[in-house]
Length: 171
Image 1 (tube, rainbow, N blue to C red):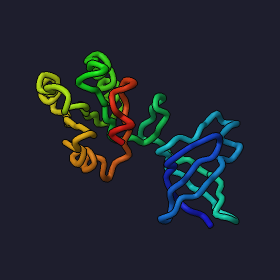
Image 2 (spheres, one colour; image 1 turned 30 degrees about the horizontal axis):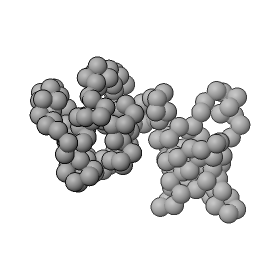
Image 3 (spheres, rainbow, N blue to C red; image 1 turned 60 degrees about the horizontal axis):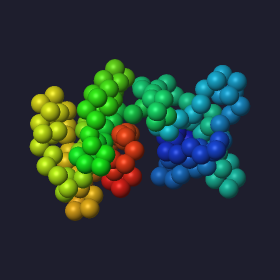
């Protein structure tokens, strides 16, 4: 059975493709390795599904964007996560990630985490003036989490930020 889908996870040479309201475990054809093409999460692909719902990736559709870190394709939104405390926000990192996103044609947003621990207004005021979406969240209290969830709908998104800023907790 031939299907079109999107790679949603890749681990150890296995790719999990969401297609036809199901997820199929797939391997990539050897031609991709020969052509030095690695399937990425976010790739739109054509697969053939056989016995036991195992599949083969036959074609990777053209990518509209690609990031090396994290290795993803077709991202249209990137959420740059910074905490207000522990670790302190690094505006240079936020600015650099914003520039990379814009260069790649990806819409950047800033998420300021740990808003329950300190005043976020100074950091919020810096980035809200740029026209970007800026979210202040506290996964502990739930403040702002619903607005981030709503912003994710209908997009292929990536989260990036320094270690310890709260990406995993937020997700």
